[in-house]
Image 1 (spheres, rainbow, N blue to C red):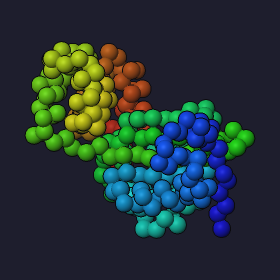
Image 2 (tube, rainbow, N blue to C red):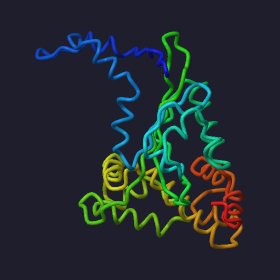
Image 3 (cartoon, rainbow, N blue to C red):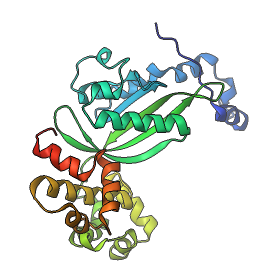
Length: 273
């Protein structure tokens, strides 16, 4: 039987002290309710119903402890038990498993959350999809990291008939036409006749990304297509995608896909992806 260590929640006491709800003060809620909220399987059951979101908890060794059904399916498996107790490296083919493990270790060792990380995920079905990933360290009462909890949410396709999309459509088209000119967020805001804040808000509604993240996504999409379908030198792809130099392109490409541009091209040529 799994035994769950109680995790400290430093902000909980503050929330209780500062609650001013005359109908139901937080400090009147039963301890059992807070225990249920802290129980990882409570969240697991909720996330099982979200088919566009992967949810997991890993221990300090990087082994899956809690997973949702979506993660099981994305890994090409049938049962949660096939994931529990195993690491990303044991489940996912290289280099993805190793990259996710390294990401987990960085969160555990630094104690800092990874938030809104834009990533290109490649699944067992060979489908490719963009996700926004968040990972948070779980701390025991002694303050030491005892695990990682995370989600990865799929990016859906925008509704091009919506008012929010139409308000940024001109800026989006401008950025796509001028990709090689290193279009900036400020450039797009000027084309849309919006402030940067207004543009960001509408881009989030239309695409699920802020403007900077959207620019990264469309540059990496362009690069992936040309790495796969052309023999264009990588340095030329970098410039065409809007990067000042190949090293900047390689860093961002690796951050998004988990591999270098040359590795991605070879993997595609060898039918490994």
